[in-house]
Image (cartoon, rainbow, N blue to C red; front, side, top):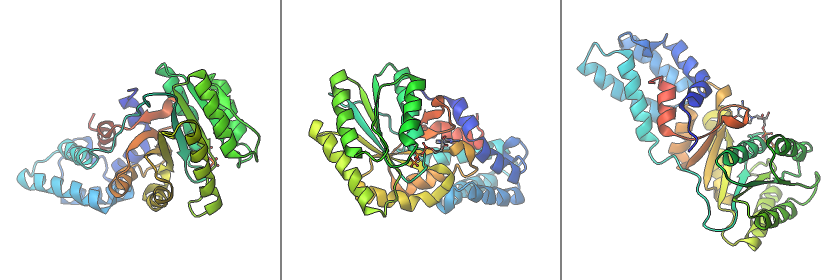
Length: 305
Ligand SMILES: Nc1nc2c(ncn2[C@@H]2O[C@H](COP(=O)(O)OP(=O)(O)OP(=O)(O)O)[C@@H](O)[C@H]2O)c(=O)[nH]1
């Protein structure tokens, strides 16, 4: 659904530029040599592909180079791209709808990771697909968060249940769930306050939100997604691990990849956590949330299309 290769290409342009600057455009067409292999290795580390993936890519390119001293940059890029696709096998997951009632998606993450923006973008995407969506403004902690989501709801013409800053987030979730059911909505997207996984009172709040959703539907929430700031690179892995342990994350959204040269981090995140990646944030506009595609990603970062 919705996948657009151009969005991936544009979204990862900083990562691609960083690799190509370092390697002086190795994938452009000229032949590979020992020194370009070395700079490629450096470039892959800089783009945050991590040790295991960088080694895997290099090993395969080196063995192709051994067999053919005239190996072209484009062939090396195709090898890199196919290694990525292999490593990322199983990482994509399409958003599915629950058999009955609203499918409830809860957005979780540390402060500023992009939860509010992602909630709005996802609602827009689903609306484009003909689904009815309701937003729940459960970030009652950050002063401007409720207004921010309300502004998105107005801009995108979406229903929203909101209260005031400081209100009980679980009470908002309860009301939103009832409203979504009463309206027969296909999806309910619950934005929550940013929190550090070390703050137990805020982690308790998440548990409470989950409990009140379950009062209305024992199978809810159907998705508990951790929204991860991709520009933090592999530093976000440990954070994700702890969230997963204490809350049971069912998937990831990786945001802000358009603003970073560390787009390789996605591979490390997948290798370490093995949590499905549903969507990527590749910009600030509604259409910049894209379903994760290992194929598009692999092609975009190695410029093989
Ligand atoms: N470039 C870019 N910016 C993004 C993306 N996603 C979010 N942002 C920006 O990141 C900033 C923080 O996003 P929010 O959605 O407010 O983050 P949040 O997680 O709701 O923040 P808290 O409620 O404080 O935890 C905003 O300025 C967003 O516009 C993205 O994919 N690309």
